[in-house]
Image 1 (tube, helix red, strand yellow):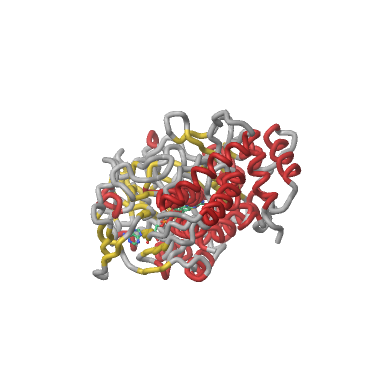
Image 2 (tube, rainbow over the protein chains, first blue to last red):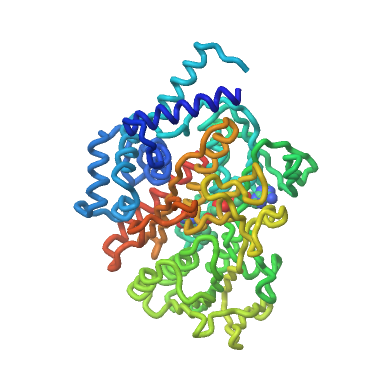
Length: 107
Length: 427
Ligand SMILES: Cc1cc2nc3c(=O)[nH]c(=O)nc-3n(C[C@H](O)[C@H](O)[C@H](O)COP(=O)(O)OP(=O)(O)OC[C@H]3O[C@@H](n4cnc5c(N)ncnc54)[C@H](O)[C@@H]3O)c2cc1C
């Protein structure tokens, strides 16, 4: 079983990297959309469903989510805490986490 | 083991889809099996147990906590002290971990670890074998560091730095205190659990006094020259509770030498004796006893860990997370522990499945109430540098703006955060 899993993982990583970066060039390691997303759900609710006054993220369009984060990052849009968070991520990371939440089902 | 072409393709396809989505595998149905024992069901341990089961349901997880039936959260416990919440509001149920995520629960104390045999020894006499061990035992208070203080004295001069009975004692004392009394807090030295915690406590107790005992005073004796969100806290104190809170830094005599429970007084290193109606002693602290007693800590009492996996640098297959571990600039907070738990959970699942470690990223947001309704925050985003050290991402994070314009909104978001992290950890 162990060998199966590691083979599959190796393949997954290679394929994943190839799909993400579109070439065989060794990619710079970056955290995945899920890795980042799982730090967001602490405030934004399980599966990105929101928590009290904190808005949901699930099933919002990826472009919309990315644009919001990019605007928080640039300061074009103001928020209590999201400007401080958005500046912690590269453009690629913001795209990855936007894709992650866009892929989750709405309530 | 040989694999039919068909099942290989199926596995590879599923894994590849996952990999494409995630850049690396951190998803369900890895299938290795194995047994993970988690010690401590607080912010770190409970999240680790839940996410190991989420990432790979074939792995059996057993969570052991000595206080399973009465774990209360430290976050929001200061609002119990101010009378704005009740004890039952901060109590946690482990039912969902068991029923929804299939985590085996054991209420018992772990007395020892045999890292070679990969077993833990329980107080009840049982021995449990593990493939991977997670330790998230929180902190141990160093009572002996302050003369006159002890576990017994803490019944009269509570620390309330582990929530539960201690919180209830301090609340009763504040309630019984007459108007015009003095509440004295002995603040801890760095590093400690929840850097803004003592100052949030002073703030919400001041709000309680303002409403119910306006002639009362608060003195904070502090061995530190500065503290978390200091500018914001002091701004709030000046505008909301002018003259009520006196923060005494080391230069002004803030370092405490001894406490006298019978005389209800505190003696500073400078030789002054201060009397008070209620005394809250938050002593220096170190990693949980199971960590220090098992040789997993450094000489200061905190556990060094590989910063990518949270595996102990002193013992194989043992992962230390939460307040007990050393995680560079990630603060000893519930949010930090939760963030570390997910990285460790992924590392454990990968190690059992022979996979690769993921590229990590951590987040912390600590809201602090400056009154029963108003809050401020500090945020941090962390990543690994080229040498494998955790660093704060440049130009990110930081504290709320001054001026109080966001107080009300952040008060609401703090509540959303609290409900959110409870759901993410135990729900
Ligand atoms: C007043 C206060 C306010 C706070 N506010 C916030 C906040 O607003 N936001 C925030 O993010 N953080 C906050 N914190 C910090 C937060 O509470 C801690 O950082 C967090 O609890 C750490 O999680 P942990 O898993 O390391 O330890 P804990 O949550 O303390 O869990 C440890 C568990 O391990 C068990 N245990 C220990 N040893 C053994 C053993 N040998 N056998 C069996 N069980 C064992 C204990 O019973 C305990 O249940 C606050 C803390 C305080 C004191």
